[in-house]
Length: 376
Image 1 (spheres, helix red, strand yellow):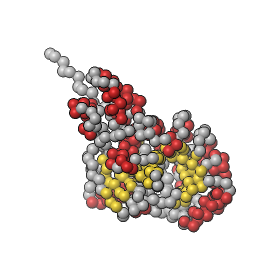
Image 2 (spheres, helix red, strand yellow):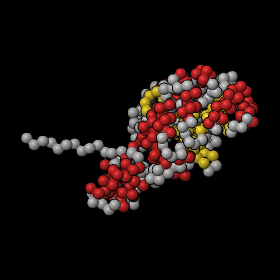
Image 3 (cartoon, one colour):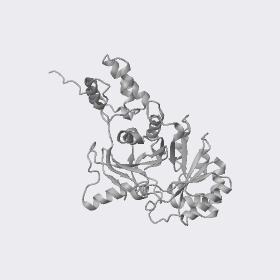
Image 4 (tube, helix red, strand yellow):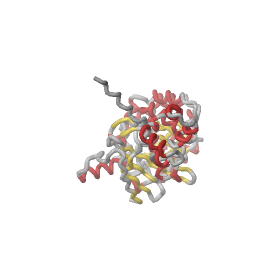
């Protein structure tokens, strides 16, 4: 009896590899077919530098080669469940993943700068009281492909909006998914990847100490932002449960390992963290790290029953920091008409589906169903 031949190996996802590994895989594939070596560069270029939605679009390659690439290295996509454009130019995406989970990305234009806020987890386990994502709970970590594809999809859909800056400030805690975030940082920064300068890539964390230690080992000048939101451990514990495991003193000490400037992210919440005494405590912390304080108004609807600090009070708070030698910037709310706060769009869309009787995650893998809703 003749044994049946072994099954063909599953197609490889080059988009889940860092550029060096992707180049090696493509080079081996090219060599095995006796193709000229320059084909490797042509193929790798189409992954991130000049991405194509499918190999058929890489018309500089022979048709037979494109068909073989489609068979052996199919290019994955994220399905756009919802795409919304705000009146202020902010564009928000809800991506549906292959298993039905949903994640968000937000593109924020400002002059020549286009900052893309990306997600690293579906949901979040940390339960910060001011964050809509935290209220939905943790679903799972994202893969390297799912994180980096958020950037790739922007370039495919709107090439003129290719991000100049990338911030890990979307859904999830990046340093709780460090292996995937680590590889994605390489894809973002590499000249054979998206080529975004290290100083234009920021990882935001609530202060996951093991992850901070690993991040500090990277030699590139990636930026670190700490989601601080309260100037004392006691205050922080009331709005950020993670404080019980990694307290403020430990987080600040861990940040000292970075030989680069640190930013404190500080959401202003009326009656919680916006007093003059809070500003003075914040000055003490910022001076220790020579940190920039980035003040964020609480996004309406993003913080449950919490109340945003008034604009006048935010200005006075920022001025009190500056008068004591701390650099402080006030970020204005963007995308108010499209639910741009982290987690809000997913909560809205899936709530609407439940009310209408549609199952969450009904969009099939690879299916694209964009809805461009301009304004509210």
